[in-house]
Length: 582
Ligand SMILES: Cc1cc2nc3c(=O)[nH]c(=O)nc-3n(C[C@H](O)[C@H](O)[C@H](O)COP(=O)(O)OP(=O)(O)OC[C@H]3O[C@@H](n4cnc5c(N)ncnc54)[C@H](O)[C@@H]3O)c2cc1C
Ligand code: SF4
Image (cartoon, rainbow, N blue to C red):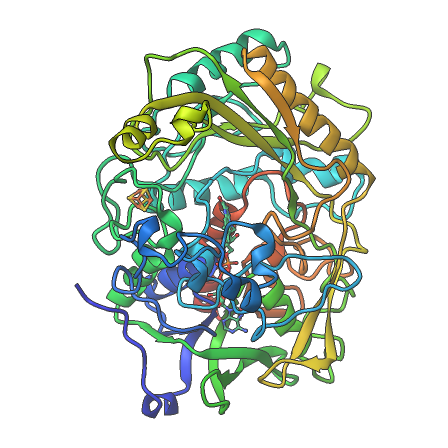
């Protein structure tokens, strides 16, 4: 099996390329693959260390007892990663090496807490993402225009739909077609089966509500049949250890899929440990000519040049690079004629829902460790009786049902058991339970923003990011409904001990790990940063195709949209290069 090659310092002397891609996460991997497959000599710059597929997934086969203190968040993790720890699940011992050290990578969120959860290494968060993969729908692309909020998306569903097809077929997405306009179907592999209780919930919800809501299989980027291109990508083994990196390449990551494809063309030069901090602008040519980079290990500075630049370093980092790219033409940051750069920061608000226990199905259990549960697509504000007076937009639920092991706290005798007796107790099946949590749309408020603090520099002398964003009235009203409807669906499905979870008005921004919208797309350069092809309005050879481009957030997990927009933008860029327009 070949490894991705890094280039040596000597080779850094070669500094002219056809294209430069910044970042190797979900969007950067796609830009690298598409550009190199179209024949462009492409430099791919990544600020973090190298992660080779399989070889560098050192926890992939470890069991809880192989970790000191079990697979928990340790005191050391709390000390080094106090902000990454706020999620409560990403930086346990099996995966914490894929999340940044907050001491080394500080940011400021004194006014309103913001959880900026990220990993700096080759592959970015493509290694740790939850793999939920839902298309935006026409409802989402039309929403701002219809509601008179923020600015209109410059594209519609039909513009992105073929690119969703293209991406889904390449990465492998399992799912069940449902034929709902707000939940567009795609090119799916066969779905993971719902288990017996999840199937029961599907029937109960369909029979007990008259607003068309359904429970469907979660759609995720897992291979469930056949193989997909990349490094030995085969079907999922039901291990549910995805956040550690998958040795089977069974879920999509840049490391198993897009980067090896780019490498195979012979056109990619991949440089880890390369912090891009500025795009170079040529005032005479009115275009970008390259990027400035600091070597993360030895602090040396380099410049690299190319005809076209793809900024894919994730929403906050890409906007931060644009903000640092100051020139006479752009004193407030590249592409910031509108003053919108850094504004309209969005996420999905979540962590509210319900759980309960279920008394039936005592003769049934679950099979393996299925890495996906169910999804209940949006059923609010899509017309007729679904329309609400207390909030606009909508939310969808992710959840699952499972059967746990028997509790040992039932009697004094059980508590005192040890040896064979103890083993006999704990291998017995326990009770069924189920839970669901909603992900809701956050509106693009101008006042939710990120800025740069030049008084607080990081260890490379670069300004740190300051966040100031919070949820507002629309989200708070929506959260009440998110919790109430979860309770009702569990109760009407026969669950007992149903309990609502989460707070109505408290949500720490960023916790959804879907931060987006700080360099939005729009039709008018006066009110947006990017056009409908993801080009900076005023610097046509710079494309921003990560979440920074989002004009509204929808409620769907966003990464498939970044992938589709990236593939579409590369197609556009190569056309424009061929026509000598950029
Ligand atoms: C635990 C978790 C669960 C998630 N679940 C889902 C889900 O189910 N579905 C979904 O759609 N999304 C999910 N996400 C979000 C998803 O991971 C992101 O939307 C996606 O990775 C964004 O892609 P990206 O390319 O913009 O950024 P990333 O994947 O974060 O990649 C950015 C890359 O750029 C590099 N970089 C940053 N700054 C610079 C710089 N200055 N110079 C050079 N390189 C730089 C970074 O090191 C990184 O490698 C989840 C994320 C996490 C952490
Ligand atoms: S559950 Fe499937 S995708 Fe996840 S790590 Fe295991 S084999 Fe890979």
